[in-house]
Length: 351
Ligand code: SF4
Image (tube, rainbow, N blue to C red):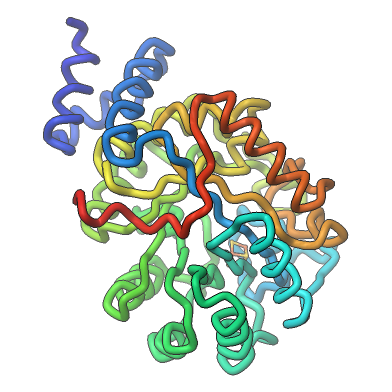
């Protein structure tokens, strides 16, 4: 048996490895290792979730943001970005359309937009909760005070997505301006857990200045946080950012990290991201085969989709929600899995 297969088996059995062993997997560039990892990850995923793939309806409701993360296309400093906000009525329309298409989770995602005060967010969340009592409501609107998170939760939100992006402080400082801190990001994540949200975190793969040790730090941080969902995607360069000259991450490295995550966190909900589909024509299918079990089609109105441009050349910006749903259904089926239309809560019973 190859050394890599031995390491992978050990990871599958123990859900953990020593730092040096994990680094060996993280830095492997051998395609055969990726395939061994994907096969082991798929086996674990089938044990926990069968062939089920959960769908989350993504509503990108504002591309205003007060922050200036160096990698992000909608950062405040990008004066070329065309800004938009959806009204409460537009958001509710997206949810209704999504509900008819079988979505039972809505993800409201946006930049850190001061227009959306706690009062406005709570009003929107409460309205969705009233209209769709059987659905999960996920927020992804950045760093807030604990009291704000509590207010959204009390209004009816169940889940919150906030990627740490990198868990290494020195790397974090290279990706963000001094006004932002990893300590505050972590504080937010632990506050969200303490309140009772199902929490999603995650990181970029191949971001500027990232080292293998940074990726190891991400895995170690996730072991500490124990999130319900882990979203990772390749870093993709955006021209209107300070990182315009940096190279994008690769599908290979992202798939490798996805499989490692499935082996370390068998119960987790792992999206096969749009970013992965953007850098590789079959990225989302490959992501499912490498351990992913969630896809997040876009429910935002077509006329604003291109404007929510965190990175360039994003796919699926031209299709109506129903077309997106149909296209993904076919892709998921071709990969050997099936979309299911329940809320898709984390498999807590098997942790
Ligand atoms: S990554 Fe998020 S917080 Fe940072 S600039 Fe972009 S939208 Fe704002």
